[in-house]
Image (tube, rainbow, N blue to C red):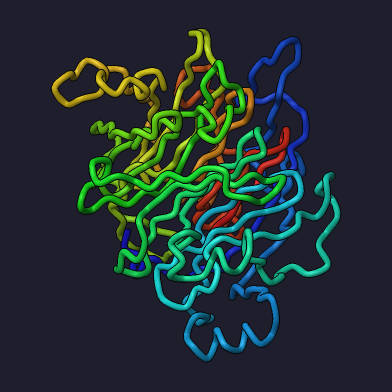
Amino acid sequence: MNRKAVPFLAFSVLLLLLHSQSSVCNRRKGHQYERYHWNTRNSSSRSGEFREVFNWKQLDFEFPNEQMRRQAIQSGAFVEINSSMPLSLEADSTRLFVSAPRWRQGVPFTLTYLPLPGADLKRVPTQSSPRLKPYPNAEANRQGNCDGLTSVFRMSADNCNRLWVVDTGRVGAQQLCPPQVIAFDLQTDAIVYRHRFSQESLLCNSQPTNIAVEYKAEAQCGRGNNLDAFLYVTDTLAYAIIVIDTSSGRSWRVSDKSMFPNPEAGSFNVQGVKFDFMDGILGLAIGPPRYYKNDRDLFYNPMTSFQHFWVRTSRLQNENATTPSNPQPFETFQSGQWKRNSQSAGCGISSSGVLFFGLVKQNALACWDTSKPYTTENIAVLKKDDEKLQFLSTVVVRILATIFCNRF
């Protein structure tokens, strides 16, 4: 993941407020429909308006006091130009979380947050480029504190008020701390779970990046300290899904050719800015329960690819069934008939199974009702904007018909 090849672009947080009208991307839920409307002929249509909530040309951070801020600048712990590459977003009911990986020295806080404008998401913030607050606090973000956070890539907030964080432990090219997954209780902001990756679950070039969480059916939101869940973590540079059983602490790798980058998709063009990427599996979203009991579909896509893929989570959970010597499970890795003409990074999914994802080359947001075949008839461009939707990095679906997007 060579970030030197990525041009600097402004970073913004957008809300897409969608009206309830019929569309391809709808899914029946009980006796009602969740509906997402777009207009592909007129991108300025008010049927799916974006409202910019925050934007930054240069990230800034809120320190506990001005003396700590001055000390951080003097010591090199805060270098403004090196702190301007945020990667991921998440949200709960009151806060927006932003990750800033330490690709270079000088990033003071790798996990930050801001208060959201309000429960109705209609109040415009008084400051469009506020300073980011360290989460859960400044000490947990101190570089060198291996009991805290070193370099956060992506996150996942679940319905059990927990924030799951993937921390690579790397600053630049230096592996400063072990890579890990941490879960925070969003009611108390305390760490309630930590898993440090074992050597067996990582390769020499591994880089954990993204996470999806599935609680075991009998546990609902988990019991006790182990939370009784399966965690699915993308290994973007060694092309695998790392499965973690929180009950036993065991982890194992599952790999398939669908997780590798496609060389034909290796060249990117964002509004005339050209660069090359060869990143594997990155986008990750877990669907709602399906027709089969206690089973779900895990949707994923490599960054360097023109396709989405999916696999039943029960296949991933069986450690013995996913060994290279037993190829049968790999027949269940599926893809649709349609190939996009654009790469895609992060994706988000609604509670009813509508998948939202960015189209990098088209500067657009698209959707697919995953209960229907993955074909052109069932996939549509929801919104296109050559200015505000350049390089959609993350799509987060948190409230019915409201989508959070971020871009570099």
